[in-house]
Amino acid sequence: SAVISQKPSRDICQRGTSLTIQCQVDSQVTMMFWYRQQPGQSLTLIATANQGSEATYESGFVIDKFPISRPNLTFSTLTVSNMSPEDSSIYLCSVYSGTGDGYTFGSGTRLTVV
Amino acid sequence: EDQVTQSPEALRLQEGESSSLNCSYTVSGLRGLFWYRQDPGKGPEFLFTLYSAGEEKEKERLKATLTKKESFLHITAPKPEDSATYLCAVQRNTGKLIFGQGTTLQVKP
Image 1 (cartoon, rainbow over the protein chains, first blue to last red):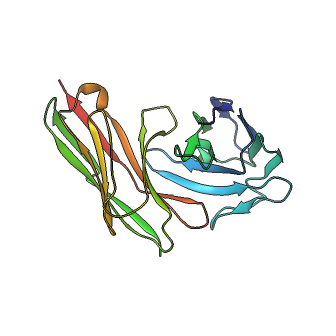
Image 2 (image 1 turned 90 degrees about the horizontal axis):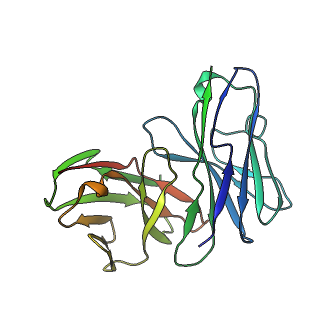
Image 3 (image 1 turned 90 degrees about the vertical axis):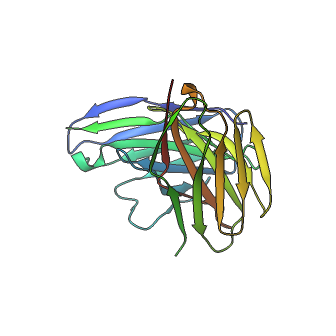
């Protein structure tokens, strides 16, 4: 299965600022996803990162707030813009390799906005 | 509307006390059902994929089963190291996953 490196692992940010999270995969994958996991909650899909085109966002998530880049088949970034305390969550990158292991997840970025 | 519901929300077991976790779902165009384990501060770790009703898969003390409406994760003679949150997710025909809320399992020695 694919191995994902996600950075940073955690950060504390001031409200009104932006944070960019990186997701690097050790192999080329077609499908990459970004999730949010709020404290004590399950995972909610933010968007599908598409290589060479704009990301596809889920209901309730917009590009201005969560811009995503996918320059190639092994790398993607998620930016959390103009942050507020409500954005404090764990953000996770995931890839689908199409093999029996299904979806692999990064270790997550724990974001605290103060 | 596609939905995944897990029960119970929390489960406390004594070491060696077997039990089952439930995942019921309603989804159009189901491609697969996934079980994950998540430890605090970590990303979900893949356990099983089930594709069709009647399918079963086992790994150590865990066994997952699937019907047309629900899946069970059976834990036989659990150990304290099995303590974690267990997540169920269904895969839509679009390739996206919908997650349940999870069951937090605590196994006491």
